[in-house]
Length: 395
Ligand SMILES: Cc1ncc(COP(=O)(O)O)c(C=O)c1O
Image 1: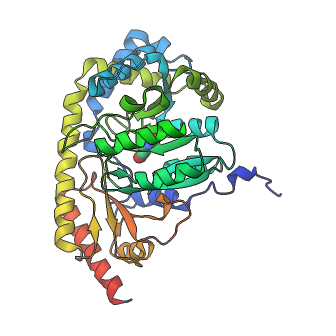
Image 2 (image 1 turned 120 degrees about the vertical axis):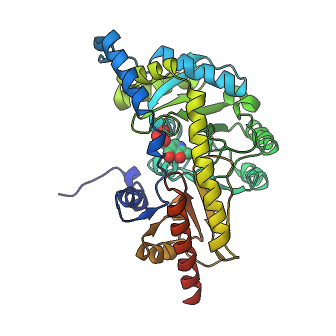
Image 3 (image 1 turned 90 degrees about the vertical axis):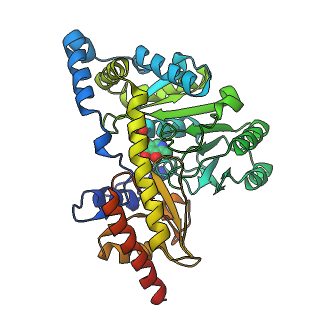
């Protein structure tokens, strides 16, 4: 039978994402590929205690249907954390719980994007966002990332010819580059957003994982209501719990709630109750501090090994937080090709291609340092350095 799918599914399938997930399951592989938090960071005992408490104190209530917006006390805790981190006041009513922040991306695309609508995205950009947006067939405008954030000259140039509805960005320890926008860069981006009437979508899954430098102001502190913030518990508690949120002004929120109801009625209410209990009974800051220390050690090790084993003409980022390092090979070298040679040596990373819109065989790739100890990092980076030299020799 002829499937007769909707036109919008034309670019929906991204083989890279399935490959990455498959690769994470291969036990013999040194994988710097998947962006998985280190399982040693999961608060297993505390979550178990929180779940038991919720079940014994209000089991029937916690297992019932709930509202699309999510459990009010949890949304209050999220709002209080914004106040604590950034000194900004967020009304808990402006927070909608989602099934991971990934769902937030899908809901926003559903709300805002008609086919062919102009959309700003970082270059490179988060592949999961590109996957979510592709289904709505926007007209992408790529804003290159520099060391200090978005390239505002290019952004200004783009904004002369169109007025995109959204700029989707990850200003802290970006996925995939690990780069962070400087305060000055944030201010300049905010000015340009104001002028063009573009809503800035600030996705911040990694912001709490800062292990060097100082906290940056959030974009909302410059743009107020004209920012939509996305957050998640995936990287600071557990990704399996699938709890994230969108924070948006009431005129947007009412549509988000409708889209959320249509998608899945509400997020996992039991998970919301358990996470809320966990947050009430535990010191999240102390927990996050442990994750930061764990990731900082691994990042330091990966940077040191890359300096030692990568050829001189290969560059890489040295992130101040988050989970990723971004590597740039010399011009003309393909990271997809390198990936094939590396796979023979049982080392995996994510070639840059899926992080770009419409560019292929790029010379960049992403490595995650969160899940490997020092010995594994040294072995993997040494093999990668060898693979790079083999590739250069065979050109
Ligand atoms: C930038 C960014 N946004 C959103 C997500 C989705 O995370 P989750 O749905 O687990 O909250 C990820 C996951 O890696 C990410 O890197």
